[in-house]
Amino acid sequence: MKKIGLGKRVLACVASAATLLTGTTALSAVGMQVQTLTASAASYDNYAKLLQYTMYFYDGNMCGSDVGSASQFTWRDNCHTADEVDGGYHDAGDHVKFGLPAGYTASTLGWGYYEYKDSYDALGQTAHLKALTDRFCDFFKASTKLNGNDVSSLCYQVGKGQEDHDVWCSPESQTDQSLRTAYWTSDDASDIAAEYAAALAANYVNFGNEEDLTYAKALYNYSIRTNKAECPAAGNFYGSYDYYDDQAWAAGWLYLATGDSSYKTFLNTFMNASNAGKSGQSGCQWGVYSPMSWNNVSLGAAILQSEITGSGSDWSKVTTYLNGKCTSESQYYCEASWGSARYNTTMQLAALVTSKYSAQSGKDYSGWCKAQMAMILGNNPKNVNFVVGMDSNSAKYPHHRAASGYSSFDEMKNQTGYSANGHTLVGALVGGPADANFTYTDSVNDYEANEVALDYNAGIVGAAAGLYSIYKTGSIDSTIEGVNGSAVVTTEATQATTASTTRATTTTTKATQATQATTQSSSTSSGGATYSKNLNQAVDYDKLPATDRMIGWSWKDLGVKPSDKVTKVAVNITAKSGEIGKWQGAFGS
Image 1 (tube, rainbow, N blue to C red):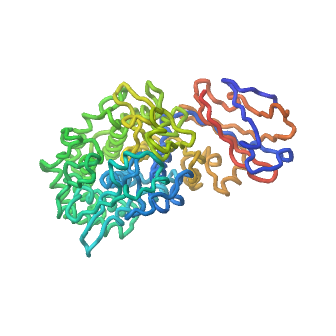
Image 2 (image 1 turned 90 degrees about the vertical axis):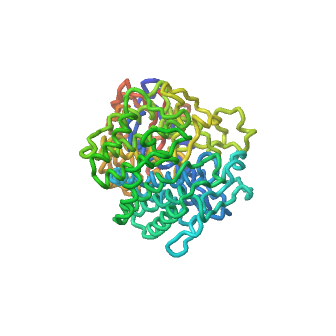
Image 3 (image 1 turned 120 degrees about the horizontal axis):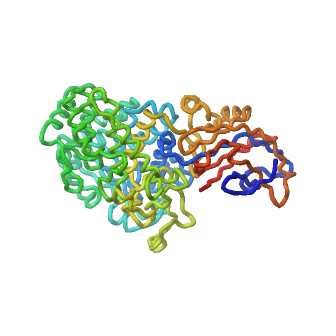
């Protein structure tokens, strides 16, 4: 082994007591065995990793008295423990719990799992998805007071919108209870009640909790009985234009849950009448349907109807709309300048589900979705991946109080980046470019380009699962900085999808022992290819030069192509006394 320095063509691993042998007290007495080395390059089609990462965003937005144990993020803790309705999720970079986007998010997450269950199962991600949707549904049930089979009152919001937005601090440090008003109604919020019902019914379809179905039925009945959507406290934040689309969405899920024809009749009546597409984002008329969003789910309802009826005429309405949106594989689909990435990725979800039923719908939009997702993941003029933490070129400074590390607006004022106390908001989809030319600035103060929210991630999670179901590309990460549960994945699922890298990506005790028994190493290229390298190299740390305790390998020894851009390197190491762990580093070239 010769001494190697850092350079474009060289991978070097610097060993130190702090970074390499954490927890080992006698370095000079330790003999090391470098067994596996993994180098990961940025990839525009790593759908397995995309699915894994985008779900973690919700761990960052958890609220309640159990966050410290429930969230996978090491830097999140209990907050707002005196809320009248405990639990749930903060809406965006703020700390309000708004009912409409939460209901939309939970139902859309449930939709993605319903359509692409096999992707979650194959990648070992089902347990995480279920934990997230269960948490949403537990909050919806806690926000609902039942009187028999009917709803007597409903909590549609926790927190004062404007007053909360006027404060910048972490949720753990926000102790002003005057900001945490719970808003209840007994004759309003039909749209929110219907979205809660849709989410609960979808969760029942997916996981079979009878209580979810009981509440879903009651909330649906309340919604169609009250037929009112004003909710003054939501005001300028999530003011709804109507409730018909939400009720149709809920009816579709309740039909799938129960087989009761009355729900199917309601769905068909809405979708086949002039009510279809009545909602409009910001008052605009988008056409027969609208892009799926917190304010309009008519497209999702239309797709559910088409699945249920199997009617070619129903599918044709959906594809006519999608044909006007899914047009170019070379130009970024930008529906609106504020939060364009959310509309883009949710349109992908709708298009992928339609493509899944191509035998009935007659259309396959998978190529368009693949191209659009590549742009989201960095194949764009800015070379920016709009999913935080996923690659070295990912957006780094989302408009998010908890992650930013700032304790006041005065601290944050005129800043672009985060404070020294900031954290990586792993998996968050930022708002994205303002136009098809990718006008974008990565700044904590730019809430149009860098806001994050529950509804922003709802579509991309399902789209990632859909793309993985088609292309089967990518692999999950076994270790993610700041995330406790990133190694929680079953060995069987990993073997089923990435057989050549099972031992490098799974960190259960059994799998770690298996790693020690082999010496296979893998390197993922920008094109998704996998290289292998057997190292099995013994190193006596004490015998390395005291002034240059560095070991390394040439990129060509791993088979990495000159055209690849390596962004992450991991080295598995064992000591004579047992397993040490994994060293990781990030490389920009």
